[in-house]
Image (tube, rainbow, N blue to C red; front, side, top):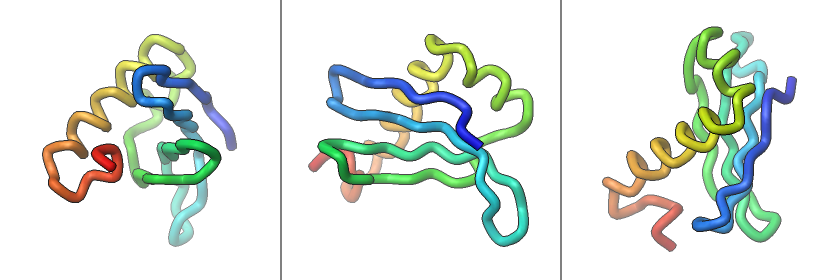
Length: 81
């Protein structure tokens, strides 16, 4: 089930938040897409409360930036390419 999609102009990224079934469990996921190609996906993003908060555009943008910043701590971050 789709929750929200945002565009991060500075990173040229679309971020889609969705509920998906993974290993027979419902998970909140974030999918990062650049130039039409998925470059990263984060499973088990958060709780039902976060699901509700992600409906808000400003919160969804802030969360995406936080996830990118966290990933960039690794030299293997897909966002550094």
